[in-house]
Image (cartoon, rainbow, N blue to C red):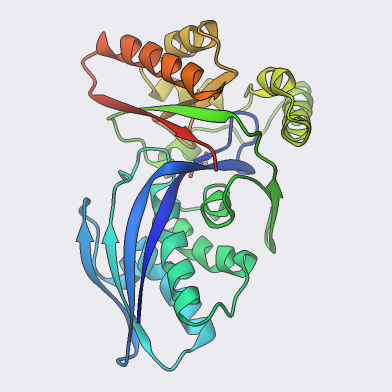
Length: 298
Ligand code: HSE
């Protein structure tokens, strides 16, 4: 018995929703093949596309698989093959794709004993290994799809939010590596109350905009005055790119997860493609290698 999985890339934070909001990409992700074996335990038998450890205890997909395995104690084992298309350290949920894929696949092969929410709990163990903190804002959209809001991590609670029909994202990945742990370490421990008020007003309004299909409101909510001012210093040309992307008519633009990828949201594929050209123009003037893509949110 075997299963082949597409494990999607995700954008966490979505500007104002640090550690809480996230969405799932339609067309970009890793592939994994998981096989049931008579020999017990978890083995990683193949990794392509990235130089990651084979020892399950040191591997994000392995750690989450082991957490689930030790809980379910099935009468069999599993072999995992990982085909990475999402580069670790790119800011589009590479570790979450691995962590989510292994628990999802094992659960399917065992006849789905656990809910998506329970899977999120075990996948968090893998995510914590990668980033040093248990946040589920990439895992939740990878497991549930579309837009999600992580209401609580302990215990895990996830809300699925509606996705407007014609919403597309454009991403640019400048190929410098930013470790999530480092991008978290530079953040302040305290937020001034006036900034907190602006931020939670934006998060609430963003959720309302998704529920009401209100693109105009959505565009007004895509701001982050808590985290972005610190992290944008790690990303060359961030301000310039953001200004040009907004001038080109995107609904919003911000850091994808902990960076260095930058995302924009647009209404319609044509606008998202126009925005992609704007991003390319800005980065072509630098020495930094990059790639870009457009994806529907799904
Ligand atoms: N919410 C997380 C962060 C996502 O921004 O640090 C990155 O994994």
